[in-house]
Image (tube, rainbow, N blue to C red):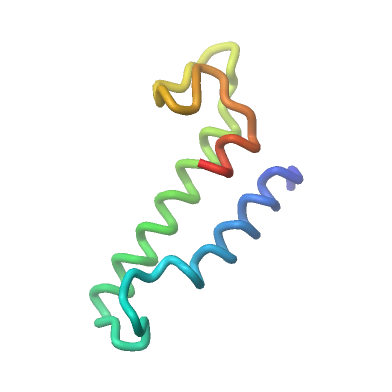
Length: 77
């Protein structure tokens, strides 16, 4: 596994503990937990596919990241 993907996985796991907007995440409903988990999965897949992109054939359309973002900027974003 590429070091950048390992760093991405570690960062996302660490961020899941502090991403709550509610005072007590133990009070989340099952629907809220599912939505949160799906959101984390979608962000992880999006970042992973962006990192794995062939930049000779692809361009990023996010104006903040630029046309050919570095792995670090994708993980930070």
